[in-house]
Length: 216
Ligand SMILES: [Zn+2]
Image: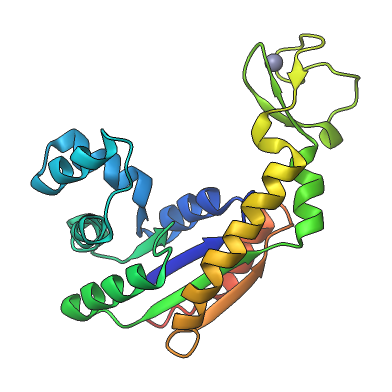
């Protein structure tokens, strides 16, 4: 089974990818993770990538593609994979198409975790981080006034910069702008399974499992 997952910021895409990969025994391929792995291993492609990351530059698409190909053809992906955070552009779609062709993989299913922007903004702006134990909590899920539910300290819950409304709206905008052309490339080729992601983690997982076709 071969899945590609997309998700608006804050919908728990990484979390779902991890859970689904465990349940279906797929390799979870997150570009951030494979980049770190290849650099740590000092592999040829890892060293190439490192020369860019060291300068604070983006890793070029062809090098990222090589790493994705390694991951897809690794033994851990024998059962399939769930790609998380890739492809992000039409150029990356073309590179991935070439890789999948070479490896004879055509049974791709696309999962999109969708959420209403206003619901997401409300959810994310009510997030706080405890300055004592670093736990992330949602103000809506706690009762007392500014008491950390994890460590019990008072007045430690602060809003992170990432959770400011304008930051969230900007990330949402970037997501929409970059994901739409990628999904347009895929919409006539592969099934796109739209999942509403504003439910609990367990419910979203259940929805994904219900929708993906297990024929392969
Ligand atoms: Zn705490």
